[in-house]
Length: 147
Image (tube, rainbow, N blue to C red; front, side, top):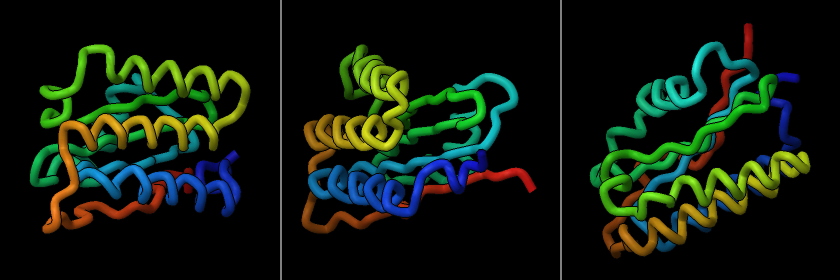
């Protein structure tokens, strides 16, 4: 299974729609990155991808990355320091629990959508949308497939 084909086009569109919906009421930025295979620690890899795709360059340092390695069925959800200093200590645990529950039932699209929307609600509380907000990062899903 390749990362780029793990979700159907319709499922990818549903995930992108969730990102757009979650970002409507916040200046926060949400990205989804999917890789075919993971080598090493999932959190280390997610942090590396976070920087690689420029998520640390948002004005308020309020980006959230949902990272998924499909072969190993591992995932991570990480946020920039602007978020981490504002959200409750158990915030990421709640999202992780929601994803784990859905992923165990192989409801990957539903899990991502629910997690993205949950992150958007929390971001809205701490980083409300302002009239001059700009979408700083693309809403597209990024993929890493083996050559």
